[in-house]
Amino acid sequence: MLGVYEVIGGIGVISGIGVIMKKKGVESVVYMIISFVNIAIWLMRIGVEYVGWIIMLVYIGAIAVLFMFVVMMLEIREEERGREYKGMMVIVGMGVGVVIGGRVWMEEEGREWIERKEKIGNVMVISKVMYGEKMIGIIECGMMLMLGMIAVIMMVEGGERKKEEVREQELRRWEEVIRRKE
Amino acid sequence: MVSVYIIGMSLVEMIGVIRRKEQRIREVTIYSMLMGGMIEKESEEGMKVYRMIMEEEGSKRGVIGVMIIGGMIIMLGKRRREEEIIIMQMSEGYKMMMIGNEWMIVYMGMEWQSMGMYSIGIGRGKSIKEREAGIKYMIVSGIAGGMYLMGVVRNYKETGSMKIIESEWIGGRKGWIIGSVMMKIGVVPMHMWIREIYEGISKRSMEVYAVWPKWSISNMLCRWEVEWGRWVWVIVVVGSIIVGSIGGYGEESIRRWIGYSTISQMGYMLMGMSMGNKEESVEYYISVYSIMMMGILGWWSEKKERRMKELVGEGKRNSVKSGVMMVVMYSMMGMPVMSGFWSKYRVMMESVRSGEYGMGIVGVIGGVIGGYYYVKMIEVMYFKEKRREERGELEKREGIGVMSIMVVLVMWMGIEERNII
View 1 (cartoon, one colour):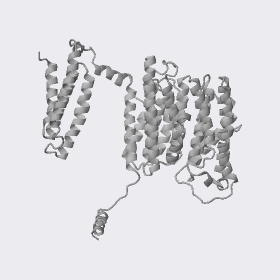
View 2 (cartoon, rainbow over the protein chains, first blue to last red):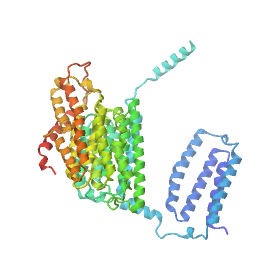
View 3 (cartoon, rainbow over the protein chains, first blue to last red):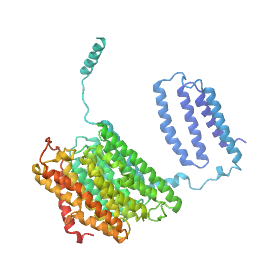
């Protein structure tokens, strides 16, 4: 029987394999995003919306896009790293999948854990606590992050920066070149 | 309207970030710290917001004290604008520590203030010593945070509650929490970091490290109504008095001298922590200690000297300042009339009342031994003749005002001892 979970999970697994099979870096990042989206939707379907949305926001919105930028900026044309390990990686991945899936298949009795959904979603509960009951805590967390930012700027920036003309830099460079020649 | 202080704080930050040349920001910070905290605590709206994660009552005195100490720290002298903003933010963390009603809220406040402390300790990161000291403090504080979390987990497992008031003392289950707090204020089993970190950090950082955490943690402990494990308590108090008073005996460096003095004073502070009326003993002690320490810092903030022997002849050159310093020193030692005597008297009476006579005796002996190195400083300033090199005073530091207020308070709190609390 091919249900929604199987289809979504299958697409996730296939695109997960695609991440390591593809030669171009950009393509594998795209496959990673597809895999993440599928996992997120799968989690939302089984009633863990909060984690699903977190994966959407954090992994897809931030980390995958960051990967994408890095890959595009570095311009990795050919897949160079890990070519010799590719076969091994596939085998290891399939092994892990078999172990985890087998355990789930063996231990699972019926599918109630998927169908059991609550009337109010997790997001509602968490957001009620976060933005209603303990709203000040979120504000304080924001202030804390602000402190972290200011502290990092303070530590990195140091004292007043020394200004230097381009001409002097060039001259110093030429002096070095001359010294090296001598 | 969320909270006056938070909005004011973010405004100051915005001004500080956008207009970096603005000179007024220091004054704005001082006034908002001195006034804002008190006003906000009194106002209805502020209370209503804070009641979500904090208690209504909490230790109001402690919060007001935190704001005043923070304002004083900024008043001590000119520092970088970012540091002022960080100090302003740290005060919010201290408030959370003192009036939070859940263990995790207190943890958040604790991490908040230590995040500020790391960055202030590391400072500009120019000298290796500062960096080393800041990173050492980070490690110490990280270990303490881990211990705290461990304690919270164990406590939750036993009691099933994250509230501070609901959970009860079950033999030694809160030991991890107490241990982490001990580590933060640096009493005996975990006192080793004080000496090294105080030696390394800069003078501006020292002003933050010396008074503020001690004040807030002792107020926090007063509020928790923690019943100490008896032996833990005895070992901590006796050990820190002995280590603090003997360790500072031959100490030449002024910073380390302040460190050892802190250890022994914290031992005395914990002496009153047994049971009964903590307002009378511990809160009085810690307020007197903060006043004396702020006096010393006000005196020291303009000095360039690092060693004790460089202070020779100080009494003749700066006679007024040295006289004021002498009063503070005698108070620190525990001389009558000054408030330092009454604070020690009160905590010792508290320990005797709870049946720990030995602890009172150790306290008296420790006071006599430790008194030597306070007197030694006066002796060096007034009665030594030779001086190797002259050192000018630091510019742009303004500790003299703070110092004079503090010395008046030291005398006043000693003379009016009967009428306080």
